[in-house]
Length: 408
Ligand code: IMP
Image 1 (tube, helix red, strand yellow):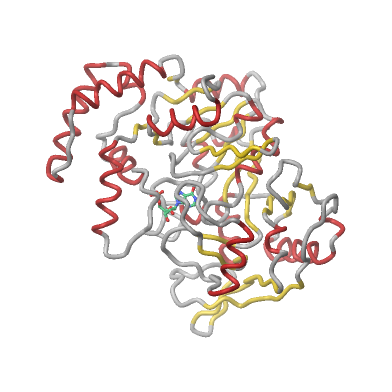
Image 2 (cartoon, helix red, strand yellow; image 1 turned 135 degrees about the vertical axis):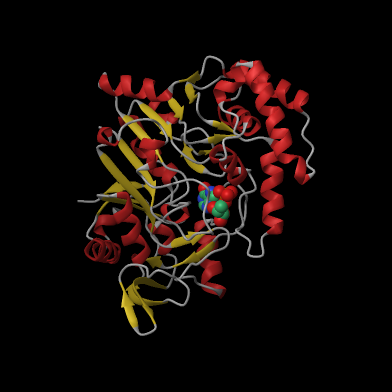
């Protein structure tokens, strides 16, 4: 069984937690897009582990893979490994086709953001510029780190590309750094597509771990306030080289409310004291950047659309305990725009008004209490199921591994 776990909102849905809960049932965990803009938090034995580039599922599977759809920062990857695993190298492979994020990409990320009249609020990890160089055919791939001559030529080319911006690009210094990194990665740089297809043929199961969320997808998200990769489930195939016919299941992760970091539309956004209460209760501050997240009520028009595009059959609903801290709970079932009601987002989200449905709060969830026994929680869940047509399979109600329940 090969499963894709995908975010159904603007990222930060709690994918790390869900992946961690199911990863021990799989043999291999794969990241297939994005880079260190992601932040997947896993709490094991009271200790928090923050994954940015490696799949968080590596904790359960024992083998992690960074697919060709990813962009990787050498420094950030090494930092992450040492923070999580200390001196022992975890068991992972990286696609020879995955692209490298250079310092110049990080600089360009900041520069582009300053130039924009309408800011995106990127994570400033160089993601956009690295993908631009990939698509523009300037990019440095992992396989280039193993061939000095090729690397040098590509870096010379890159230097010319960035000359007009007046950015410092020391080919000799960058080459040395990348060759050192290449030597450290030599045993790990692999044709990941071949490896995964062979393993699947041998009966191994794969957990594909999406980063960011559907509404940040470069095609299907709230463009231009999106990330620079495709974040939808179909990308699991393109970003790892595993055919779509090998994917059996797609599990969508949604928070019981909605959050967003950075700019762009958020139709159900809450402001003022309620927003502060929800943000603080949920610890809604970025894993990667520490920025406060914008918060809002669960948005079903966006959720329906996201579930449809991904082909989600089951939802894992997270942070239900946090939503219970609010005195009153609302869900947006439809939008109203210019007198017309919408169950799916209209072409332009600007000017939509959420039509809200009110729910009774369930208050605190007690230790050893089963969420299935809390009528207010179940009313909320059944409403989501009924109004999206998708089963809520799992509910998460805390940080710890055990704070997760399967719903009948
Ligand atoms: P970038 O991916 O750094 O280019 O940022 C583009 C947009 O995606 C910004 O609004 C970021 O805040 C958002 N973003 C990128 N990665 C994540 C994530 O992992 N969680 C939530 N938002 C993200």
